Image (cartoon, rainbow, N blue to C red; front, top):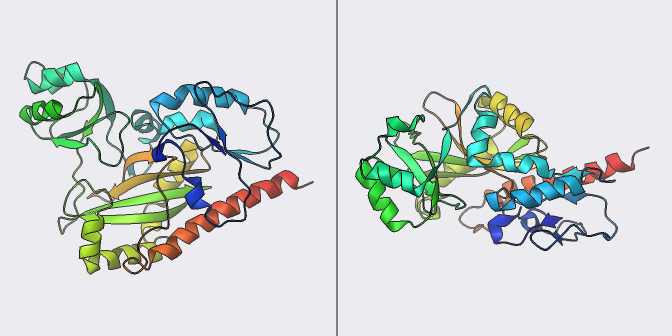
Length: 315
């Protein structure tokens, strides 16, 4: 397993995915001052766990060269990981049938300050951008620093609280259902097969898996349980073409994305990542349906590893 130094979001949390699996795993760290080693212990597979990030692009490029002629299978080849970024993913996926994404732009603080002060109109930027739009600093995840901007004054107030210099900006897409609740899905693809990791239901548009709301409303947990049990026949079937198109375009063995459904029935993709937090740590008394679903994902991941070894060993 190839990692780079960082926090929990810096690498694929493979230790959670392979919890209790009969796997011997050595971890190689790469990054600044940590070159690919000349010698490694015996191994059957290489899994690149380095997550997508601007700060990881150089190490991923070096890894692509180091692993180009690997004698064993390489899962999640490093050259495909940078295309998961919020700005690159739109270029990669926006033509996939049945899929919708908001184009994401990188804007500097100075530009946003001018917009907030009324010195520059959105139309003058030459971008497909209008109010309301969402903004967040580069490199942050989990809803941190994310805000919806309805008018220039909101942007000025936001920048007064957030000290970043570079931001992601995209049009806000209202994906509320008829009951005015927002439903956000986390889907992972294991060799192209989709699995539902969670479904958050919230009264707020920013759905960061709302444990408080999911714990408070039994009806929402029942809906999530139903969505997991019938995922292949319902959500997976509705968006089969989009899910297949995403896998074909991304070319990674394992990755995931947060998404929703638009009011006209398309798959609305928010962001992609090969380092989404997938775990089996939820309270089994409150979420009894989640543990079997997580084990289904874990089993699929382990089966992928076994199958790749068998392919190598086949005559």
